[in-house]
Length: 226
Image (cartoon, rainbow, N blue to C red; front, side, top):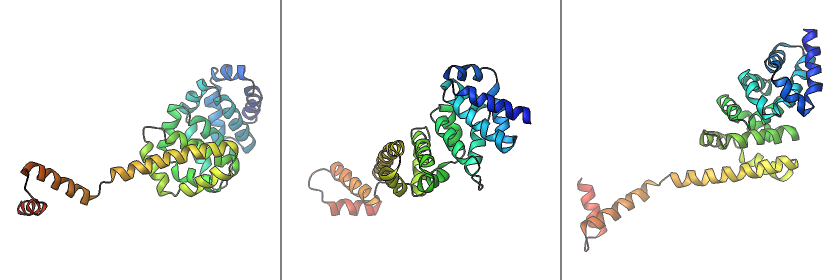
């Protein structure tokens, strides 16, 4: 275990250099780091998480990490009551959510309640990362489901507060997400047709079909006879 932890620390140091991100990703080190993040001791987990974050900055490594099972693992860290590695897990989620496979894997983990909770009461950095993940989910194939769930979880008030008092990045993400939520809510209202409106539209169609001289009362009588 100690040898694996030392290797993770070395990979963390090397992964800071952009040129090494590509090289390390091609060696098969990413699955080993994911295993260490799952099974290692605290120091090894921390170095593994930091190395994985650095490596996943390179787009080509994101798919490797996702296919190695990183998303369920970091989702477990996000919901861990101890809060161990929470900051690292949120940072990794934020960067993986920009990848199509990552977006799908995160969405499958039912993340919205914990993301809304994080936006409402997390640290400044975790709030902005949670908003970033939520923003990517709101542009996925399941965007309506995610936005509806966010509305149920009460996302609007925390988003407004983040837009006013968050970090610079957090404010930008919150404003973008508020715009998408607003468009979604307007669309929901437009889609929810009032039955009385449907009845009036049916009367108008019947009036047009019966021709001139026919009153609304005549149509209602005809409809009642059906």
